[in-house]
Length: 234
Figure 1 (tube, helix red, strand yellow):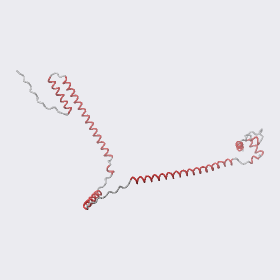
Figure 2 (cartoon, one colour):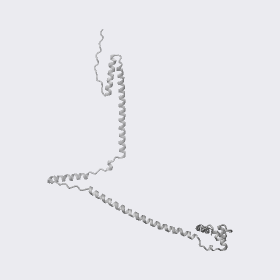
Figure 3 (cartoon, helix red, strand yellow):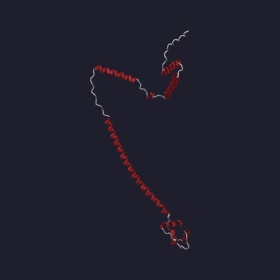
Figure 4 (tube, one colour):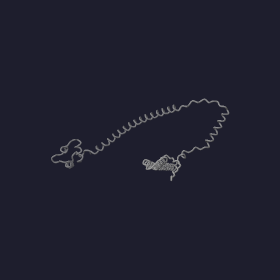
């Protein structure tokens, strides 16, 4: 009862509902009003409960929401149907256009005039065609899978390439070392030839320089006859 009276006061906007029903000097709260109404058997007890009206409102709202949802879904289905029809028509037009383009692109070539050949040439060509057809039938086509290299063969090829590159690098390193050695010999011979002490040493230094130069170029020094030694005169 107290909750119902409070609800009625708030809904109707009557803050002095208690004063209007009972004496405000003696009753100051809803609980006191409830006790007083039951004591005097006030007609307000015959009022229907407010909970029924409160429970009926959500049902009406749910019905309205269901109707609105049905209308929205129907409109959405119509829009989807229209869009699907347009897209299907567009796809059919594109397919028809593509088929027309393919037919235009692949036109049959005009037949070339066939020259009349002698009977012997025709028979010979027929025999050759039969032989070639027989050979093609006996030869089995090579499977594309067999033409592919297996992973093991690929690894071997890669290893062989690495070994060849290593050998080439070693050969280049050895050639560079030999060139450095020959350059050192040539430099020493050049220094000795620049500061000779005697004519014999100068000739020897020049000979060594020539040998080093020929060695650097891959040549050899020709053999020379040893000049006779002068005899001592007594």
